[in-house]
Length: 171
Image: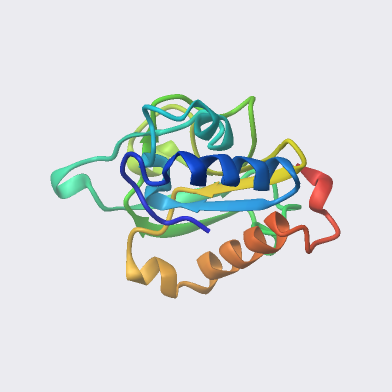
């Protein structure tokens, strides 16, 4: 589970070991700021992240917004039991590239809830070699981490990434 950002987070040997771990069946869950990690000099990391890196988030008074999050796949262990949508106050990221088409999108921002238009995936999962990768853009606030819905998402994601669920091959 990664919750970090910045360049050169892992050195060359650590990167090679991590790539082997994932390709040989290991699991990964990246949270919030992880999409701002190693964006420039590790092409494999881009694949792991579904090709989506942090671009920006609203600033100033709009940086933290109350919004509606829509569930796109309620069969994944990270989204089971969430219903069709939920509201949350969060720092919502936009990404350089939309990962849709490369990953299974699990959650997306309802753009109308923040006066916007477009497609804004927030959580996704996919296979990488024999391994599994999950990312969730939520998690900026302590209140988010205290929300049982978010904790359930992360617990389900970790179970899925660790191949501990019966629906592991769903994405």
